[in-house]
Image (cartoon, rainbow, N blue to C red; front, side, top):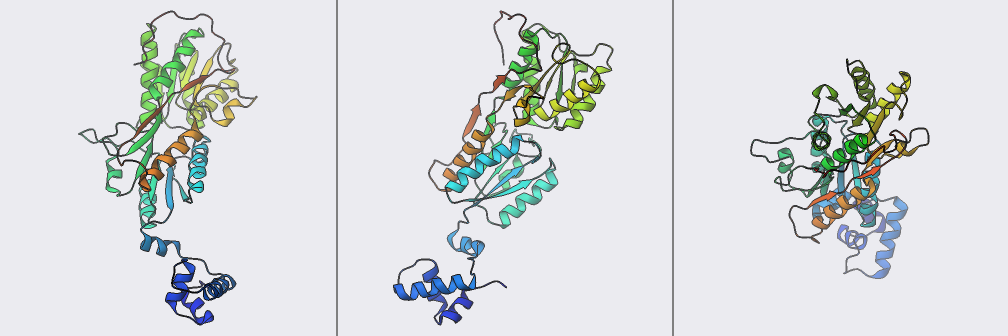
Length: 349
């Protein structure tokens, strides 16, 4: 049974107002009475009602973190960065996993508002772009500070943090070209994903920069899971002129690709090259050693939390803040060593 202020007042033989002053460390009460009330509250197992207190103070010291895939190791690292900063500043984080389902995302967003969180950090399950170019219009209806991962333009009025996905796609494909692979495919995630589309654009830019024709039969998208990587790789290998390398939309897709290649008896990296994106913890395992594009996941989470909490607490000027981080190529054992460097003017845009 929940212990209330009324219960404490009854046992301590004092008024509700006196109990409230004692528990909230307010003046107007002597030290002996204050201690008696605190001791009584402890004995009864009293827990303050954070929601009720938040209604009074217009602050709950809670934030929401909405992510699309808790299974993907990329997102727990972001969550760890968010939680570390939030905890240091006395905030609690509500973690919501949408499974890339916008209906589920909307349910969580409504619940977070009902719980009166002070702000939200979100990786949207789908990119919504209105006719006038405003992104994430559905988030504009939420009257809370919001920080978005993998943003597009900032016309929606929200700060966002992302890696330079176009640049990442470019340097991944560039590496495969310079390692001597001739037929480079792209296996992406959801076509509606901004990050996926930017990585694809980077892939195409690299091919064009090196004078390689873009073959649409080598470009395929589905979702960000390993099963898709396996199935799409299997389909690409059945082409009359199959690829000898692939750049994938994330590391999880790449793991499915590697499984497929292993079962087909195709040697990596001698006969086939693979580059992923994210640099999740599994990518560096000795059994995998995936060449990939690294994102500073923990740092991204920390930055997002710092930006959000500064806005909540009025420590920064309210408005859009756009943070673009540089990708890094991590060369491991799923690609050959460079056979020859191309000496051309690089065009990543």
